[in-house]
Length: 301
Image 1 (cartoon, rainbow, N blue to C red):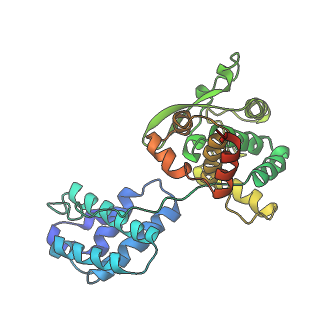
Image 2 (image 1 turned 180 degrees about the horizontal axis):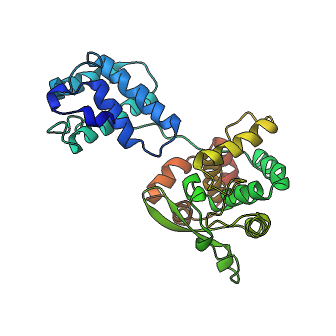
Image 3 (image 1 turned 135 degrees about the horizontal axis):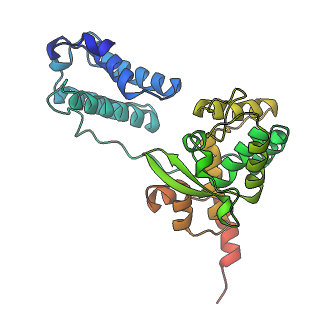
């Protein structure tokens, strides 16, 4: 292991520290996430004098100089935010592992990103994918569960039969307990069609596993596997817009708000940390939607 070669802090250079960070901090994360951190951190190291520079020669003023240069650059706000977020996490790791005596990036502030309306996958494409999945019991159950519960893909991948209540009377039979990011358990509610699809899938699969969604061999379906299923239908149907699990979450939140569900209930069902998150991401409407709402609710004196 790379971290085993590190003996004293005065011998640790950027390359060694970054590789150690990636080995420890991105365990279980997707290849895409690991590549994202690697690219950001090695780019940062190059701007700090190269990956061979020893970590203990970096001072706080070096980071503020880099930060100011980044702020003045013409790169997109999201890209700036990503670089600063990666660097902050990197130096927090170095301090936690006693590689550096202090967290040099602690005072770097993440820039505010512009608020954007997040619509998610369109109703038309959602219906296309659901209909195309009807011939596959597992996919049909999975996509209906995703569509109606708004569960994150990690929660879906980890969903267990022991956390379902399918044989209970209404409405309990349409609830499930999922384990999601932040090591949090929460209860979600599924549609009647998702309930029927889950019952059918568990009846026809030819293996026993406490994991609900599995491969043909009976091994648990991974988060990447869930994304690959959606990508396969996207390619089959020649859909150009993104169809990732998170796009389905965006659609769910947007639709519930449009349908008139109170924002606190949308926030709680979505598993957001606070109602502010829900309002920031989904409380901004296009002018056409605002115009329709005006015509619906405006009453002349």
